[in-house]
Image (cartoon, rainbow, N blue to C red; front, side, top):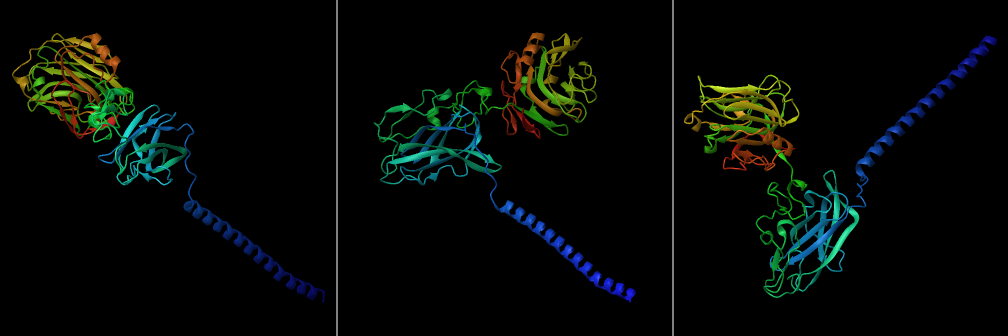
Length: 464
């Protein structure tokens, strides 16, 4: 009976253990399901609920710098000045009847400035206000609100709304009554806009247009960055202006080049000496030798200022005539003169008795050499930047501020060019061609000194 009793007890205990294990598994599964559900709900809410809005600095401060209502075209000119401490990327401009909270946005889809508005800089925009102006309503309000970019979204800065009242006259007419022929200053009075005026027409002020600011005025963004003028009237001149970036051309080393063509200004280059100057930043690669500037024809080369394909040296070849049998002056620096990845100022000079090469304003090597240029043969051929037709060679890297002189430069002049940097208007005596590469876009490289504009083939613009 004892044995039987133990068996009975054992039979009773085993079902209890199984039931306990089942409960534990159930609890574990419930916990797993709860955690998974929580993760799902969190992910869903994170996607559906708006994220925390980007904050604007307290020192963001845009100021309305003059508002003019044009009675004829029903347009509103709004001047905006950055009176804060930081660049501002965008702005909302709204207009509505005075005293009403709801206003119409005038710059829908154009809230972002062409370039960020830097502190102290001002800009003016002309907006169509025909949807706002109403017959019989004289008084309106214009408001601006600074904004920042959150990815691709323009986010208005809270607490940065600035409002100014404006009278547009009955029926959406002029800004204020005036006598025909009366003059007053335009809103912008800096740079080329100084002393610009608008004239009262039909009893109202028409507003200032680009024509009123003069032929040199460039609205919104400074484009002419080498004329010594403040063209956008923001109080900053040329390269000091954030709008003005220095540009260069990048050559892929495969088939990119600038072709100047059979420019007559180069037909007598080197007859009485010649010099070649440029800023280069070499990249790995390239086909054959890497020409910086050259003149050649099918029969051969007239001159070539280049980086040899092997090593990091600098070379120049000047032939009396192209083709087999021509005499030449040639010279090369040692290696490491033009390292990959660094901007280097390079100059090659032929002064009828010597050939000299410079890097970063320093004379590296010279050799005595004298040849008699075949003036008739030199009437032919095309001038290239980044390429020469014989052999098929292409520069790999960036080139800026290319100059060709019809005389030999001195050591002091080469040093001046290096110290002043690209686009400096110095050492201009004897210039035959000068390509500053300041355009930044398009397929034409303008000759800033003569009429030898170059055609850009494949090379791309880069800001430097």
